[in-house]
Length: 322
Image (cartoon, rainbow, N blue to C red; front, side, top):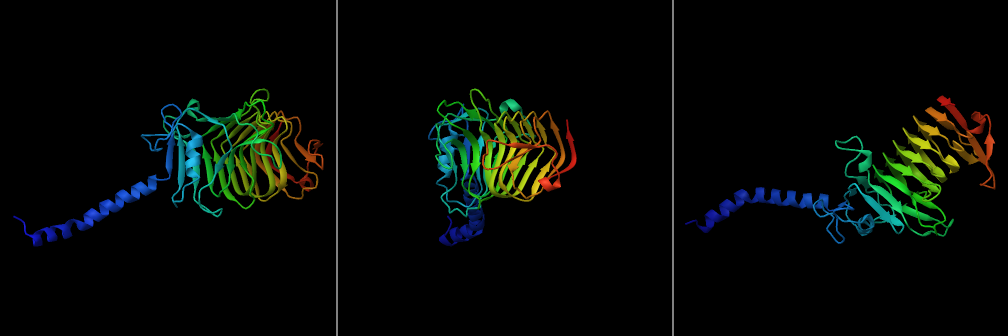
């Protein structure tokens, strides 16, 4: 029979291993605590949001993250399926507005990964009535209210609510915010039926848009206020019936390269007295009604600039126009 002394000696021998396993288990739990899985087909309301017990609603997942207080990165992973927004979604946590924790909404099967197909991209659409009254009456899908937010591998469609005045899938309105990346996302509007007034309505610092596609948004990208370190790369914008890019503010630098803009009313519209210099690099503009436009006090009356020069804020490097 083991004596008390022997029990103590054995316990001391295994105690470090026991503590290591306990710490590892606890760490694993913490690391997974701010990851939520959502599956429109297999998920259930009120589930834990784990990989094996996903939520059914993207709205429920985002509402859960609004109460998060941890310091780990936040991930919401969407399985293939359709996700309907009935309200404006606030992208934030319980931490202060200085929260710099990474927050990502992404497809479980992301582009360039094994098994990816365009048909498996999660589809996000809105049926919300107008949910913002200032500075204009409109509906917003995602309102980004924190630093370092990412959208990856998602497909956004328009708003089919007949009472909706104008719909913006993603907005960031606070110029103090920094870090916003939108990659491998599609934005697909339909002028008659489920329109998109502006796919992205953004301000602030560190905006990066990569490998995205925009189809029939009235305006694909709206930049307002003070925007800095804006980057648009490897992106297709097609059929914007106002402008591909609307600059309603001022910002530098402006990193624009390897983009294709087709069949839009304007490639870019900016304020009449804008002083900043924009450079278009290695891009193709085809079939657009106008190239650069300027507007004054009446923003609905754009004036085409027939031959923009450096004095008119545009420089071209290896740009094809036809």
